[in-house]
Image (tube, rainbow, N blue to C red):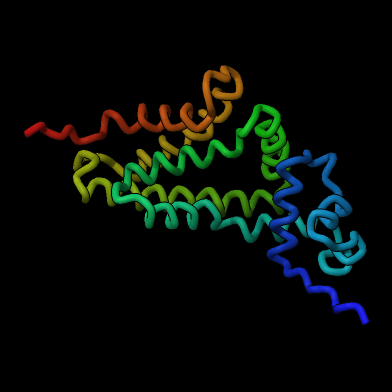
Length: 200
């Protein structure tokens, strides 16, 4: 008697969908591709989610707090809040592992921007991410890393804008790796606000 097949959880399906999305653009991504990645049949995914769109919507909803949670996790790995922000910038560069990878991610972003059902999850993610950055910057001010007259909300918006634009400009110039490029842009944005440490 053959062993009963292991049930694949929704989280495992979402992880499989994400892996497939890193290789395939929206027009290439199919339920069959996701099913193969998850070790299931396309029919099983249809029974569970109804369609590729519904599966991706659920994936999008679950990722709404993803960036903010990631930033919180980074805080446990770095003593300096500024170091956390730099590390987050470097990790964002994973979206641009190559110009082709960034192009695929931008294709998915186009769907997020033009489809209201996807956009609400994108907006929730953006708001949660900005709040996490505001918290980081506020703590950096309290820790004396940033000047006391820094407006954390205004600076968070600038950092967020710089990171988004940095991905695009790296893809155009392709000067070095994306991680160093993004980190450099974040450093440039933060530089006027950093407290200069006096040498003893």
